Image 1 (cartoon, helix red, strand yellow):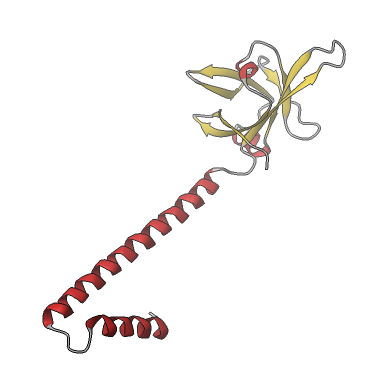
Image 2: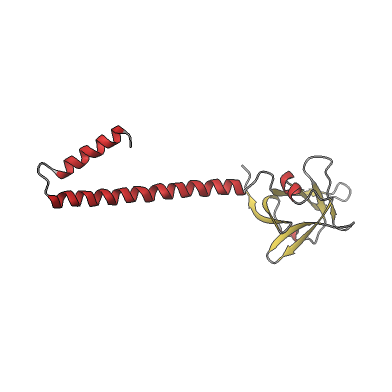
Length: 165
C-alpha cells in the first residue's frame, strides 16, 4: 500500500472512531473495514477474471481462422454462383488440401479434406485459397460474408457470421 493511501485510510478511521472510541466501536469499525476489504478483493478478482476471459477470447480467435462466402456471376452464363474462400490459417490447419468436401453434420457445416479426385478443387494461384461451390451444398443457406471457423476432429466447423470491422 502506498504511503498516501495508508494516510488517507488512517485519517478516515480516526475520524470514524471519534474522540474517545469504546472497544465496541473499535470492533465495529474493524468489522466494517474487513467487509470493505473483502468487497475490494471480490471486485479485483472479478476484474481479473474479465480480463482473462477477454484475453482467452482474443486468443481463441486466431487470425486467419475464417471462411468468406461471396456470390458472383458466372462469366459465361451469368448465373449466380458461390465462391468459398478460406483464411490462410484455416487452410493450413486443415492440412493445405488440394480438394475439400463441404458437408452438413447435425446442425453444423463442416469442411473436410477430400481424398482422391473427388471434392472441390482449391485454387491457390491468386489471393486466398478458394473454390467455386456448386448449387445444392449446405453453403447455399449461408448469406455472403465472413464466418469464423474452428478446427474440430480434423475438420473446419463453420461458426457464426462475423461483422466486418
